[in-house]
Length: 165
Image 1 (cartoon, rainbow, N blue to C red):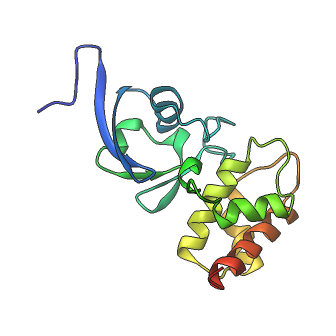
Image 2 (image 1 turned 180 degrees about the horizontal axis):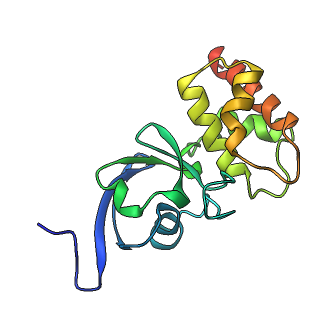
């Protein structure tokens, strides 16, 4: 059975932030476009639209990817986590809390991508060194804060999470 419908759009079903979602997307839509324009999840930002800034980072099937470089159709049957999927209705994710407490954000354009990239880092390396954190987050650009506060926030969140708080 084809996923095509008469409008030249394709039907895509994926688990997004823990919820199975079915949506229509144009064949040429990037995942970033589908998330923002088709689903209404606007946390991922369009910074460069060529994979160089990390503002649109999401976790796709356990891997950190720039959603501007992934076609929406590629997520068929997959699992996507966006920045909107980090917090619960009851509380911020420890990374989000650490970013607030450590003043690791200013304008907010890069923040969602950094948060998602940091989540992917901590999923793979729960206790990263500063060097590992800097290396892992090297694909994310910030033009406002610099990186020291961001790295400090990530390492503080790792400590918080590993201590079970």
